[in-house]
Amino acid sequence: MPHAATAAEADAAAPGGEPVGPLERGLAVLRALAAHPGPRMRPGDLVRATGLARSTVDRIVTTLTHLGYLRIEDDRDVLLAPRLMELGNAYLTCCGLPDALEPLAVALADELDESVSLAVPDGAGVRFISQSTRRRTMALAFQIGDLLPAERCAPGALFASGWSPEQQADWRTRLHDDPRDTGFPAVPPRSAPPAPEEVESAFRQRVADARGAGHSVDDQLIEPGLVAVAVPVHAPDGSTVCALSVVSHTSRHSARSLAEHALPRLREYGARMEAALASPAPAATPPAPGGPDTSRAAKAELGPEFLQSLTRGLSVLTALGSVPGGLTLSGAAEATGLARATARRALLSLQQLGYAAPAGEGRRFMLLPTVLELGYARLSRLSFAEIAQPHLARLVEQVHDSASVAVLADDDIMYVARVHTVRIMSVNITVGTRFPAYATSMGRVLLAGLPEQEAAGRLARASVRPLTPFTRVDAADLAEAVAQARRDGHALVDQELEEGLRSIAVPVHDRTGRVVAAVNVSTHASRGTLDDVRQAVLPALTAAAAAIEEDLAVVTERVRLTIP
Image 1 (cartoon, rainbow, N blue to C red):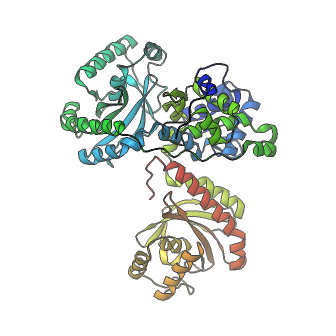
Image 2 (cartoon, rainbow, N blue to C red; image 1 turned 180 degrees about the vertical axis):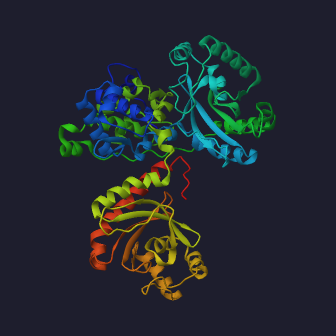
Image 3 (cartoon, helix red, strand yellow; image 1 turned 90 degrees about the vertical axis):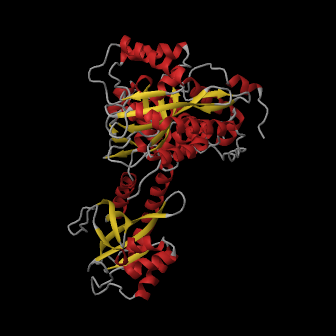
C-alpha cells in the first residue's frame, strides 16, 4: 500500500541545486561510449569526448568496471559491458508499456506478417521500446533504444502535435545544427540535406495530416525502400503515450498499400492497447528493502579510485525501475539502503540530467526514455558469441588452456565461440566446427540438459562409432555418461574424441533455467590426472559459465536473442 507523501518528498519534486558531480560525469562517460562509432575507446578518447580530466575519467572507468557496466580489453580499451543494460531494463519496467502492450504487438506482427514497433517520444525525437520483427532478407535493423529524428519516421508526426514550445524550439535548433542527422546513429545520414526551412515546412504539413487522419505514414523518409504506418496509443487521460507502427519494404508494399493493408488492424490493436492501459494494473510488489550500502566496502577496497556518489546514483536509477510506476523518495531510499538525504540528491540529479521526473500525486519518480541512450541499442545488437567471448578470454588467462562455447546442432555440437591459448602443443578447433555430441564433454552436458526421453532419442539415432580406442559406444554406457553429467553438473571426457585430447564442460542456462549452451576447457591428456583437471579447471570454468549466464539474463530480459 503506497505511503503518504512526506514534506521531504514534496520538496524533492522541485529541482534545485547542482547535480551530483560524479553521477553527472559518470553518465557523460557512458553517453560518450554509447555514441562513439566504434565499440571501444581509449581513456584519451574519453577525455576529448567529455572534456573531463584524465584522472577523473580513470576514476569513473574504474568505478563502472567494478560495477560490471564497463570492461577493459588489451589493458587500455574501454567497452560497454552487457550488464549496463540493467539501466535500460529499469526504464522499460518503470514505464510499464512493454509489459502491458508488447503481447498485443507480437500478435499484430503475427497476424499481418510484418514488423511491428512501439515507440515513445523522447524530447524532439522518437525512441523504440519494443520490436517484433519478421525474419527476412530485407529485415528491420532497428533495436530497442534506437532514437530517430521525429521528422523522418511515422510516429514523429503523431507526437509533434503535443510538443511544447521548448520542444519545438529544440527541434528547430537541431535541424540547423545537424542537418545531416549525424547525431542519430540508427538512421543513414542525409548525403544532401534539404534546407531546414524546407524540412520544417514539410514536417508541419505531415503533422497536420496526421492530426486530421488519426494516423501517420512514412514513405521512405528514413531510407529508400522502407515504409511504415503508425497510429497513436492514448493513456486514459487522452495523452499520447506511444505509437504503434507497422513497417515493411517496398518489395512488399507501397506506403499507400501498406496503409490500406494494415490500418484496420492497427486501429483495432491500438484500441485494445488503450483498453489494456485503462484496466487497473495488478498491484506491484514493492522492492525488497536494500541491505547495507555496499559502496562502502568497494571504497575500502579500491580507495580513492572508487566513486561512491556515482555508484549510489546508479543504484537509485535501477531502483526506480524495480516496479512499474517508479518509487517515492522513501521507497528509493528503502530499496537501495541509502540514507534519505543521499537518495534525494541522486533523484534530484537524475531529474536535472533528464533521466527521471516526478509523476502522479503520490510523489513518485519515474525514469524517462532518455535512459535508453546509455548504450542500450548498441548492447542489444550483441550476439551470443560476443556475450560469451570476454568470459572465455578471462577463463583462458586463468587456466592457460583453450576454452570454447558450443550448442547442439542435430546430433552434433557446433562451436560458436572459442579462445585459443598460446602453447607449443594446443588444441586447434575453429568456430563452426562440428563434432558428434556423444563423444564430447559439451555434447554430454547439452544432452543432459534435455528431457531424459529426448536425450535418449538423440543417442539412439546417432551414428555411434569408436573414434579412438577410448570412445564409449555402448548405448547403456553412453546413457549413464549423460546421466552422470546431469547429476554432477559437468562432464569430463578423456580421449574419446581424439587420442591425447581431454576436455571438461559445464552447462550455460538462459534466464528461464534452460540449458542453451555449454562451455569447456580442452587440454592435453599428458597434463595431469583427471582429478587434477577437476581441481585446477572446474572452479574457474563454473565461474565463467555463471558470468555468461548473468550477462545473458540481463540482455534477454527485454531483447530476443537468437542462440545458434
